[in-house]
Image (cartoon, rainbow, N blue to C red; front, side, top):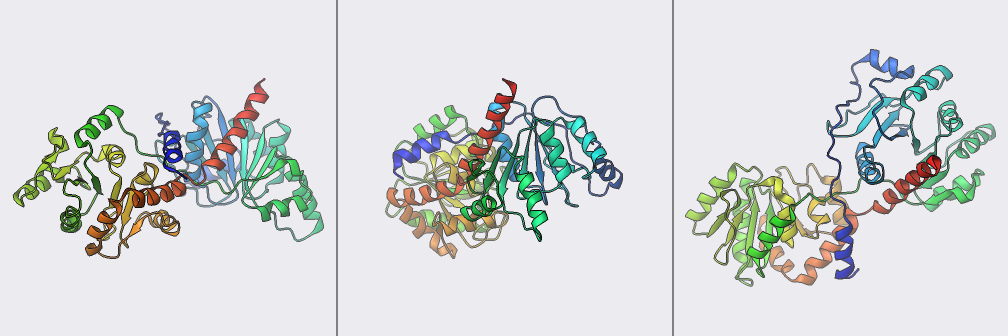
Length: 419
């Protein structure tokens, strides 16, 4: 992928678009009365106005993947709500800002099913992984609800009779989206209609970049001008000396190098600025309404809510906490914005993301604080930083095609139904 293609892809990244807050919470695991009521098909809250998409899981509800799907659907179905059901005994409560209702699935009996469908009146249904609850699925299909099977896996069945049941249930879905070619082949072997089967991959959460006020970005970029820049994102106090030593080292080959530091807490900005000035550094501080100029060595960006702005102007980002074991900021945020990442051995709470990035050679790993200066100097070469940034972008955007395909099918089916 060349730089032009990369820039075009970045332009397509969707900034978070859901600002409405639904005062909807799922049931608490310790409320047996509510759980029993939901199993009888009774809704725990009123059905929200607007489009409602029902997602059914055989086990744990994958709330992060549903959040990404909701973001995507909201572009074409403004105000969409997701109803997620499961037979699992452990239902998570979604965040307060989430347009997601987690609900226990009704018993697979006609009475509870009828009450459930009459209360929620879903506009479309997405089932995940494997078919099950045959009476519930058949009742949804009889009502004319468009149905899709996502992350489809071939059912395990012990008998020919069970295979015939699964084959009939698979025929109720408009489209069957499988995780890989092997599952597609196995589902075809059951007798499912081949034209309805697609291999798309697994639905994953898709990282969204932190937002930024474009006028602020223009102002800061103008102040920085052509100076090389690197960012220390939320370094812990224990890492600050390593960051300063690395900056001193890297300035040997890039004497105009500017360091931006986003403290882990905004209140540290004034203290760090004073300490660094006493050490002889020329400091500008965001919260003091100061912009960096040609004489500035370090810009203290003590406005963490503007982290998206600083990722956008910094082609290199060191993830704080990864050298000391402190809390690490999300690596997917700089990855979505084309900033090459440097990180140490500590990863919590983003271990899975950093492992994915490392497998894809998508960040510069350092084993100790002493390696930070060399890593910054290395990535000041634009081609090396661009290579890491491109690899990180591929990881951060992995799953976007699956998301677009599923959302497109759902929207198209609803429009056909309304026509």
